[in-house]
Amino acid sequence: MVGGGSPNALRAVQQRVIQNVHVNYFNSPDHDNTLTNVAAHKGVCLSPGFLNDHSGQFAWIPFDCEENFPCVLCTHSGDERTEVMDFVKTLQELYAKQEGQLL
Image 1: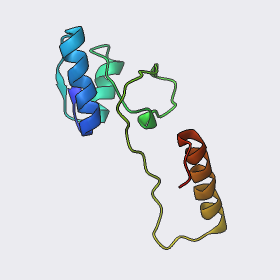
Image 2 (image 1 turned 90 degrees about the vertical axis):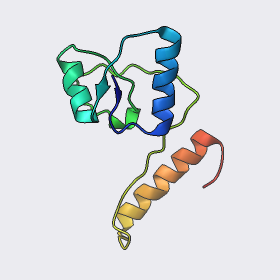
Image 3 (image 1 turned 180 degrees about the vertical axis):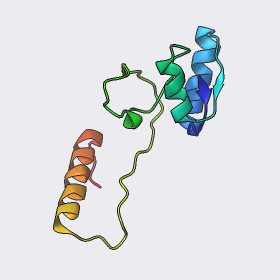
Image 4 (image 1 turned 180 degrees about the horizontal axis):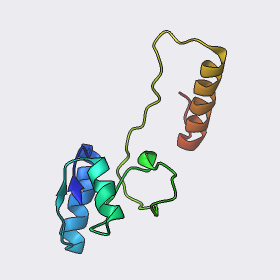
């Protein structure tokens, strides 16, 4: 399945698979419908890993590609609770180690 609210980077990967693997495909209006179709055995999809709900209902198989998909942490702009700030700092440190750069 392709389409839905896919970000441009994911659309590029989808198109590359379609062009190089020559698979049949159909459009899905959004991620929820895509998962419904996967559950009904009507298709498979490429999806950013951050959408994994860890419910165990789907097999999330890594698919390596050159594109990167942005992922953000959202909180209230004025939220300065110690726990939130510590969590953000931990995420930034992990990200910096992964990317080899400081944030």
